[in-house]
Image 1 (cartoon, one colour):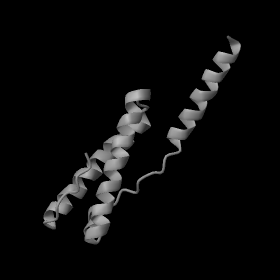
Image 2 (image 1 turned 120 degrees about the vertical axis):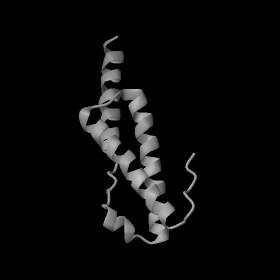
Image 3 (image 1 turned 30 degrees about the vertical axis):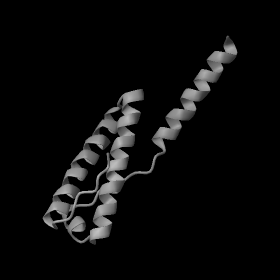
Image 4 (image 1 turned 90 degrees about the horizontal axis):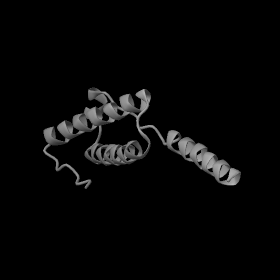
Amino acid sequence: MAKIILLAAMLTAFTAGAFSASPATKILNDDEIAKLSDKELTDAYIDVSVEIEASTALRNTSGYTPEEYDSFKGLLRYRIVLINEIKKRKLEVPQTQ
């Protein structure tokens, strides 16, 4: 029984560390976004969409901390800004789902 508890504690510690070590997405301001090439803009949109989906999956399994919640809201806002810039350039928004 003690081995099972120890194993569960180790797995919890390992997975918590793995999720907190995910790479941060650099959020650009409006001027920096406007300077992106079409390819860079599309890639940024795809990257942030992937990060949001991964964050959602994490939240669904482990809950939010206040810092994670603020980070998640920041990613959502950033995705909207990227979509607006893509539309302004009359590009097609990449399908992510």
